[in-house]
Image (spheres, rainbow, N blue to C red):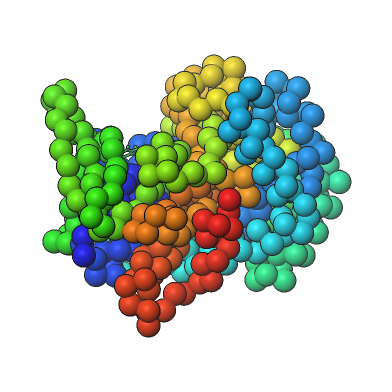
Length: 433
Ligand SMILES: Cc1cc2nc3c(=O)[nH]c(=O)nc-3n(C[C@H](O)[C@H](O)[C@H](O)COP(=O)(O)OP(=O)(O)OC[C@H]3O[C@@H](n4cnc5c(N)ncnc54)[C@H](O)[C@@H]3O)c2cc1C
């Protein structure tokens, strides 16, 4: 059976990879001339298997006025007269209860641990040197806190997650500086941190290319780059995909038919699903990153660092340093806001003053987010149209597990005796809406 996958971000490529592994013929459609060029391009690089707690949690409500008013807030809610934004906002508020947030954390942990197992299998079997192929490293992660109340709250989360299988420890300031001396520049400002030695990192774009390289060694895989899906409809139990190829600036419309289609087009999935009258509860959460080339004398951490108060992640990727942050709601453009970049540089400079920020590569991306913070991995209400969307801030972390789960669900639909490794219910279309 030939299955179409629409969208070759990290989630789409991982889905195609799992489907090919499961024995299906796969055609992967991507509007750009390469994989992983949208939200998956220059993200925070975290394989954040233990830090999956959703944005929707009780303190998010308390902080909402700050996010609405304070221009330099790491989370910015730009309120608009837009029904979609208000509906998403209401769902977000509903998801902010302590019980719901704990339940979502537990469900996401099961998916992230499943993803980690898939990642380790992939590295063991397929990559000669993951470190050089996509800068993969198990480097651990330290989340630093600037006030006692925040550290105390984090300690409670550590306790909750310990009962769910995470191995994390709460450190005081001296212990933080001992494991990461490069934090000495802000030693006066931190009170402690949470350390997770098992966390990993890698370059998401390079990882997408590694998966693609592996896919291209299979005869059952076809790649359609520069091929934008412009129309999808169903006739005689088949999906007709109209796509427009853009070669040498000549737009050429073409069409192919498939019995099964997987939609994994990030935030753009909304418009494609709409053509089939399927409504997706996704909203774009815009973020920014800087990638700085390191000089010999630059002092940067080897461990990934998250500055909890400022919601900034810092990650060393080979001889570059990635700084990623911000959640801007109400701006779904890919335009870089110079004020947000200036703010990011100012905040990073406080911690790592020697870096060459003037020549940093600036980037913005749109996280395809559901209000609950969970992806949808399920068949849509239209039989044969499958969804792997809504990975929000965790798409790199969850990609391999999500791809595998979706491939298992498709296999099970065709062969009822097939096994599914993970309870899919928390990620069902009905559940995440
Ligand atoms: C600042 C920032 C930092 C982040 N940090 C992390 C992190 O540290 N760890 C982590 O796990 N996650 C992180 N994320 C989240 C992660 O990057 C996303 O969740 C993930 O990239 C989403 O992948 P995706 O494949 O769903 O979407 P995308 O990467 O956007 O891919 C969708 C693809 O579909 C294609 N497409 C769209 N429409 C069509 C069409 N009509 N026809 C054909 N193709 C189409 C697009 O061109 C694109 O290639 C971060 C995100 C941001 C913005």
